[in-house]
Image (tube, rainbow, N blue to C red; front, side):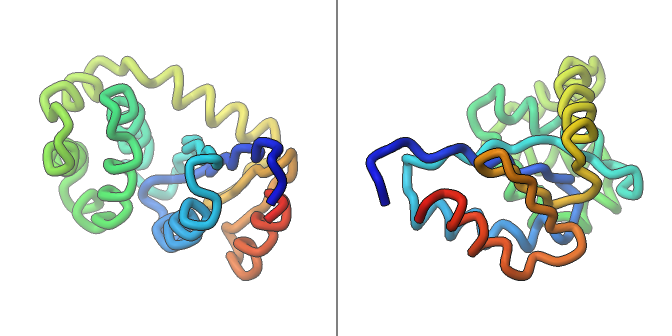
Length: 162
């Protein structure tokens, strides 16, 4: 690996998407391989087919505000079925389980303080051609994992120069 900084990886995700849950293995492997030099940025792309995907994105934005965004995102992806059954209340419970101020997450869902951020991500995703999740953007290249994730990890590593 060269001494030049790595490009960041944008991970376009619906936090209620089973394929995004599967892609966590690749994200962990990327972090293990490249360490702190690699920035992986969660970008919100809630899909309409998942009833609570938009509130999940808003809750994740609050989790990032509280400094535990990735912990929340991973916990949420691990408990997709709980959110499908329990809706916004499950989001708040999951937030509390990872040490977030659950009351503040609940308030954020009510007052909509992160709607603009989520809307902005969705608009940008559409503008660059994101159609499904997971989708990665690495070194200016869009890699779609919504249909198949086969070979994506190797392609990301290649684009990262590793």
